[in-house]
Length: 312
Image (cartoon, rainbow, N blue to C red; front, side, top):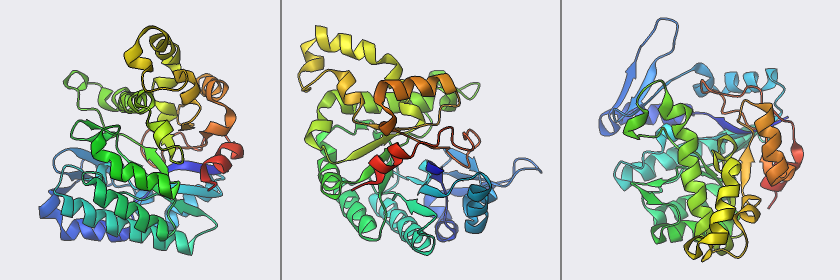
């Protein structure tokens, strides 16, 4: 079994955070006796530092116990650090990627990995993506934009050009939504996260970017957010409004089949619908391990989608 959506924090990254805790305003907080410490960066994104996040041997042991034979490991979104000066984002990306490349080199039968990049500087992001892939990583995990600049914006052209040259996997994984209406009942996570994916993926689809950079393999987290389940509305808009269809060479439904999607939906009927709409070769097993809301083990064992995503 494969797992194409899983996260890890190498020891080298934790050491960097300790050494730069005042620069990035890192805090370690104990919230309950039965929980590990929570790591909070810049008073924003707190998460529990479970041992399976940080101990390589334990991570591999947990994967093996669940029957996962190969994992695509991603950095965690809380450490994208796009809201810091570019030099900081670049440095933590370099440390993270080098550590993952070393680990993958030692465990090549069990692991592949994606990089994190300084997306707040697209030229540096392009350079780091190339360097990370030269080290053996498969692409990068990124957020849905930077400071309200959407990924289809011209600002990101240097990054997309390099990703296209590299035939990179680009895994779009949002942070929590900061919409003020979603402050209660865990809604920033429950609906905010898939909503951010929906906004980003819809923008990419309607912008014509998929035609401009056809060699990039865009993987959408959490089953593509809400996009696959509202594709009829996009198709109708395509028929009615020229400012929807102007940048497209085909109806939105056709472009839906050019993304990849993980299986992190926790609902078999929703997953079956996704496979029916986009094709089994576009849906890959994923878990979001070891976050609290992980679908563990992955819901599907589909190797066809994995092969199409990882092939170059």
